[in-house]
Amino acid sequence: MSVIYDRVALIGLGLIASSMALAMKRGGLAGEIVGTARSKETRNAALEIGFCDRVTETAREAVKGADLVVLCVPVGAMGVVAKEIGPHLKAGATVSDVGSVKAAVIEAVAPHLPDDVHFVPGHPLAGTEHSGPHSGFAELFDNRWCLLVPVPGSKPDAVAKLRALWEGIGAHVDEMDPEHHDLVLAVTSHTPHLIAYTMVGVADDLRRVTDGEVIKYSAAGFRDFTRIAASDPTMWRDVFLTNKDATLEILGRFTEELFALQRAIRTGDGDHLHDYFTRTRAIRRGIIEAGQDTAAPDFGRGGGTRK
Amino acid sequence: MSVIYDRVALIGLGLIASSMALAMKRGGLAGEIVGTARSKETRNAALEIGFCDRVTETAREAVKGADLVVLCVPVGAMGVVAKEIGPHLKAGATVSDVGSVKAAVIEAVAPHLPDDVHFVPGHPLAGTEHSGPHSGFAELFDNRWCLLVPVPGSKPDAVAKLRALWEGIGAHVDEMDPEHHDLVLAVTSHTPHLIAYTMVGVADDLRRVTDGEVIKYSAAGFRDFTRIAASDPTMWRDVFLTNKDATLEILGRFTEELFALQRAIRTGDGDHLHDYFTRTRAIRRGIIEAGQDTAAPDFGRGGGTRK
Ligand SMILES: NC(=O)c1ccc[n+]([C@@H]2O[C@H](COP(=O)([O-])OP(=O)(O)OC[C@H]3O[C@@H](n4cnc5c(N)ncnc54)[C@H](OP(=O)(O)O)[C@@H]3O)[C@@H](O)[C@H]2O)c1
Ligand SMILES: NC(=O)c1ccc[n+]([C@@H]2O[C@H](COP(=O)([O-])OP(=O)(O)OC[C@H]3O[C@@H](n4cnc5c(N)ncnc54)[C@H](OP(=O)(O)O)[C@@H]3O)[C@@H](O)[C@H]2O)c1
Image (cartoon, rainbow over all chains, first blue to last red; front, top):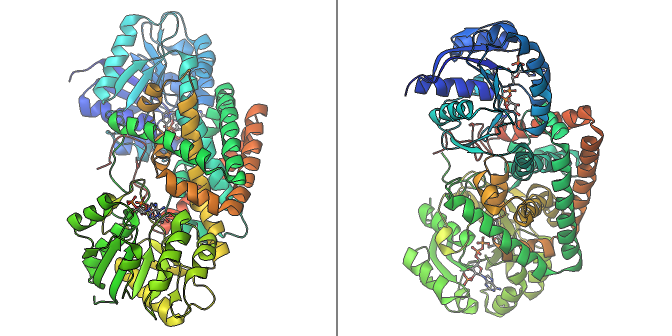
């Protein structure tokens, strides 16, 4: 592949930024990768690991002369960063981000950008429960989706170029509007995370079941929850605070359905339970057919075939 | 290893029974494995795959002369099977089961067993979302826990022998009383399953987010839920109907905590969210340290390192 942007600046150098940088290097997609992060420790790590060609102490230095600037900080920090870099952006540059929420990020970032830069928000649908510069790997986005969320005024050329970058990184790219993005993610990611956090918190609280027992006997189901609930607290706090409406809407539907199942358990209505549990299998089949997961036994639950 | 029981009878030949049989064969733990299942199809499959040496049409035939009988049917069917086999059990035989709920199974099975057999209920904490005789594999129980739940009158010798069998199958064995078992499992398995079923049901219902989108963009968090929610509807209906009290108790705690988090989202209380999300990480660390899962990135969520 060949260079798509001569100079890329990454603001924030955690899991997502380091994985992007490693994938851009793998594909030879960027002439130079400049990075910056809040802490000296992270900046040094980026140089040691080698996913940045150069690091700067401040974001305003990092964006100087950059053709693409990607904001890779928690959603709640995007506005402050945008305000800092706004006056220092090169004319004609593209500004993007990787935040898990889109409407709130656009609202926070757009006002700080000058008219002569292109703003093309984005969100790669890939991650792990690990964070920081040491957690990245070049394959993170391979065959995953990256959603681009153009705003009124995003130039088709700028969108196409960013799309080419993400495809070079290994992802499939789709476009979506911000509100729909936030609703879809509330269903497929944000509410499931909140629920997993809650369930793990309940287990932790329960006095008659010791932590030791929870840990020892967590073979089935619960273990997946603990993995989800090990994700970065700051990132997820920001997600829920900024995708409030969609999350609360989906939570409302969730508790409504949960109460119906709870009632079926209390009244011994086995048919209701059986019907409900049968219906949800179809979605799983769809995911396997769409190649988003494998049907291999034991993934995250049993003991056998996992490597 | 050497033969522990000369003849083992398995009643029900699905995921758990077929995995047990394959593991017993791997270890040379049983002189003969006799099996039976409701349908001719399953009985034939057991012979074809070869995990049973012999199959019989009825449970009463299967248990004749058996030194160990293991009930491997859904929890709700245990009582009926026990009633059928009771009069045909060999004196001195051990009867066990693998049901996911213990108090209700003991109540349903014990009255049908003659005084001259040993009843030692059990529950291996391992499984997948697949079921039936084709889904079994010998490694399912390797390094997993099997809980034995002796009842008043379970002879220490009989318990020790069954423990040796499960250890030969590859599991670690612990003992626990039935009520505590049911509470621990309500926390670590039953309630998480109900929640996953509910969340997948909500996604399925939502008209503005199409199934296609849910399936396509299910990279983070939700995908684990769909795996859990693909488990056998009959098994799980029976679990919730028979572990009603503990499940309802844990569900009550769960909704209480969920409402507190929901309120924090609504009022924008970021500190509450951040504190909660920080606390739940500790449990995950404990599970990894206990060797019940790996810290490898991307397990069930991202795109990269999975095999
Ligand atoms: N992790 C996922 O699963 C995932 C998936 C898709 C999208 N995202 C989104 O990607 C973004 C980054 O996530 P990540 O997982 O890469 O996070 P991460 O590994 O925790 O890295 C975050 C980076 O942002 C910096 N940072 C944190 N707070 C800041 C602040 N207030 N001001 C300036 N810089 C700050 C950190 O600097 P220091 O290292 O110096 O502290 C760090 O370099 C978030 O918006 C998140 O929503 C995450
Ligand atoms: N799957 C798990 O994750 C897991 C983990 C630990 C414990 N368990 C427990 O293990 C037991 C078996 O589960 P499994 O996953 O092996 O189930 P499975 O794969 O669905 O197999 C169930 C077996 O029971 C037979 N059966 C079903 N209903 C019956 C009835 N009403 N009367 C007589 N036989 C009947 C079936 O016969 P046909 O094949 O002829 O229909 C089949 O052979 C359950 O009690 C479950 O709670 C399951």
